[in-house]
Image (cartoon, one colour):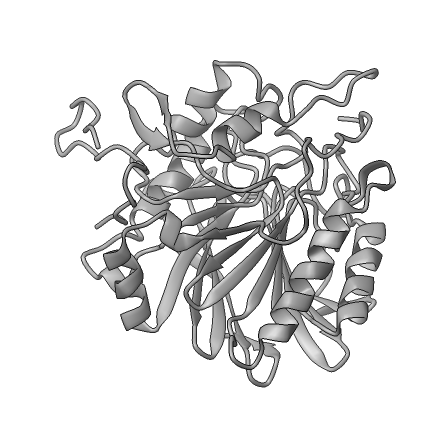
Length: 389
């Protein structure tokens, strides 16, 4: 059973019941991309889930005392005709059942929605509309480094096409035959407000790595992050919802070609120190694998999770294959990683915990029906500890 969109939005076609039936209706760093003008003031960059799904759906989530949602990045299936991306999407579809309380409320995309040519009309159907045509939930996204227009040595490209798909003032149809409308995100960085959880979404720019929050010294996004951390800190304890930070480039990684973003980590740490606010989890993509770290930061345990396994894959990802748990310095401990494993995260947040599950889907010699929970963690929001579920 799918999520009911708030009119006039659409989230996906109805999967036909009969085979063959028609769709049911319903590399090296270029210059950094400047933040799209006009750059909004830090306050007010909020997207409420109630703007996207029907009030009865919000009521069902509230009554269940939990919210479930999907997270994964790096989905564009350019290496294999989108076959792997479609397998991930179909596995995500299977999370929808007759039990409304367990159904995902939205899919939060961790960036790299489309590879290599976001401004090419042929890539939108093959890498976005077709794979998710039967996934009936809103798709919210942050831009990854490949989600700008095609760059050159002289031009960094721009985010105009991404914004036309995800940042429109009102929902509008995208293409004939596909029952999905544009998303109404306020900007390329924003905060998603939902029952039981807040997600602060950041844009880490267009380079292969490291990520950048302040392109060419532009402080607007860091000002936004500071304002959001202050707002979250000031709302507690009346608003106890956990805060997840989502950013495409990982702050910390063992990847051998994409790697960490140490300057970005330093600047986010500085904002935490200045505001006195520590988020409850960090989620990223960019690395085409799964990496799960637990960081001990000022007496709190924080999960830093990389899940860039939504459809794209390339060469080996890690410098080494350490025995786990493996201390990595700066408070980070590597708990788990998977190379060459497609899959996605299923997140559940209730009044006292965040539970993350990494579900693997078929690759290589695995059977076509294979879907398995490969890693699970649970954040205790009272004790601020991370353990196995």
